[in-house]
Amino acid sequence: MILYSDRDDHYSQRVRIVLAEKDIAAEINEAKPEETPDDILSISPYHKLPILVDRDLAIHDPSVMMEYLDERFPHPPLLPVYPVSRASSRTLMLRIDREWCPLVDTLILAEKPEKKLMKIREELLHEISSIAPTFKENKFFMSDEFTLVDCCFAPILWRLPSIGIKLPLNRHLKPLLDYQNKVFERPGFLDSLSSIERDLKSD
View 1: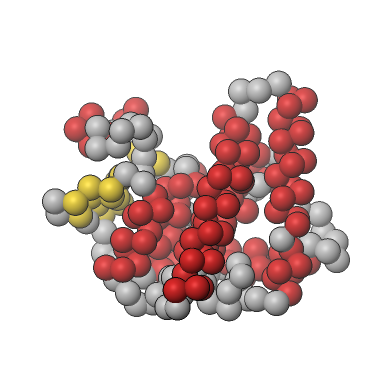
View 2: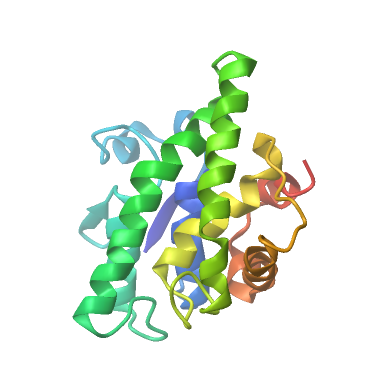
């Protein structure tokens, strides 16, 4: 099994977290898309990383990769057992992908005028801050167990300082900040970080 992983991409880090949490023996080939061989990059119709190759199977969608790994290596499980809970987790991941990731990606590219980027930062901070109270009820993102939802959310939280967002230290956000610290201390999360990503937090 080989994961072709962008060394500073939050979608790639999601998959690396799953590999680390499950202690899966896989070769992780870290590169930028322009450094990746064309025969590998052509697996993706978008010519983007990550790409997971497992024998004759090649997957180019990070969400499909995470669920494939969770099903192929079921321990520890990273999706709930019960259908209703699994559907809830998938809905949360879809929300992250459709609502938050476009904002994060725009801020990472930083190709828009600063005034526009400031508005996007405010929007993303508002969206993330709005879920803070949920962490009073659950240890992790809408669950008492670490799941694939956390694998999607944690790389975004890690990148906030590097895209100009600082979570305020206040009473409202304390549950979220406590969650953030808990996730960032997990061995699986720490093992997932590339050398470039380790430096992002200090930006």
